[in-house]
Length: 195
Image (tube, rainbow, N blue to C red; front, side, top):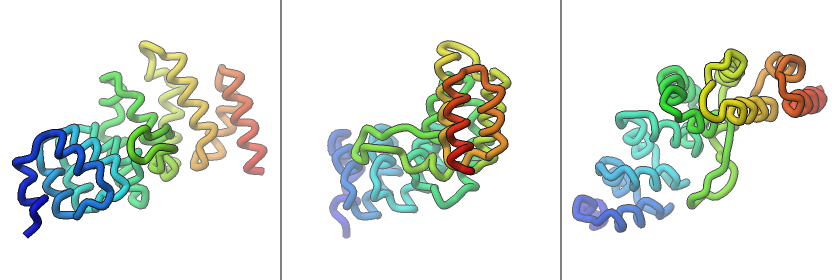
């Protein structure tokens, strides 16, 4: 009998959030919070470095793509490249079309966490090269055009040039043909670093 897990259904939103933030929370209670419909508690649970694999999978299987992008960016699937491909292949276009390009950027290229695990996001370091090459093609084909186009595409190109898993071929393309000189310089430095 686990008094926390047994009473999750009676807890207030504030209590659920408090528990979801606790990195020493037992697995049974994590599972109950993941099954609870309160999405904000899910957000804090995903941000928790102590998230167990069963809760992670429950959250992955929920409808929509927000949890999936956050799970990838927080590094909960960093040893499973097939999850990166599943997310990119099934949801990246939808996220870009709905103004969620920042979610794609954060999950696959990098960013920072401002929650309990403050600092660089661990998930993007495991992004497969094929996804990075596809993001380069997207930047070059101007499919991300819209509000803030120049800022987002240049930021994506800069992140691609700095990413350790970007193919050398893509780095060469960025150093030669990308119209922004700052990105060209970053790519050239990366080529020099790789030797």
